[in-house]
Length: 267
Image (tube, rainbow, N blue to C red; front, top):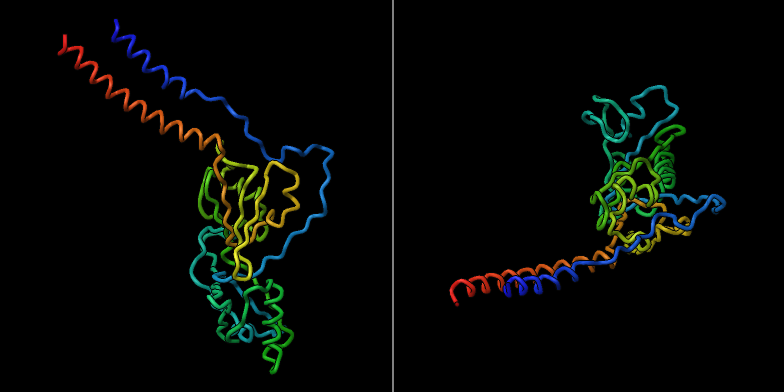
């Protein structure tokens, strides 16, 4: 009987320590209502970064396709699926890699500095190379597109990892939604976005629960952005309580074994 009381008293600290109050976590856009108005939408133009893969297509008014063909990379392989919406068997366009110095090496026009330019600015630069000092093509049209836009989401996200852009405009709300949302233990009011701009890293902090997130320059994401969702204080407390509870339980097991052996052999 005394032994049973002893075990009961040992279990009480474990029980009370494991009990915790449930904290309500803030939700997305918590202070937005049906009368909330926002500023005009400003979508920043994506700027080319190192390690970007670009497609550059060149056309002219020539009726002979072979005239333009020498300035375009050949089509390669079958694009089976992918995000472009093409069916199986569609040929994929090769891309030009932006190297560590921010340059691309065009197979006909040579080295072109691309880092920091928009698609349109790079297209204009290519047109200049085609028109001067010698007119290589008559009235050329240049189309530049990104081939490898993606961001990475880490932390308290239901699906961590790299996420390919479904286009060339992606907001942080859309990215988190595509990744399955923030977990129950994630900090929605303190999401960090790490971005590389002109060789320097910038960090922005976004509150997903506030309507002010639309005013943040980090609301629309850029390629290669890193989104970090941290843990709430409640989650950190849960982990600490779990660790201490496991230690208490282990000590309790040792005491129980010793007490049982003592009860058997010592009379």
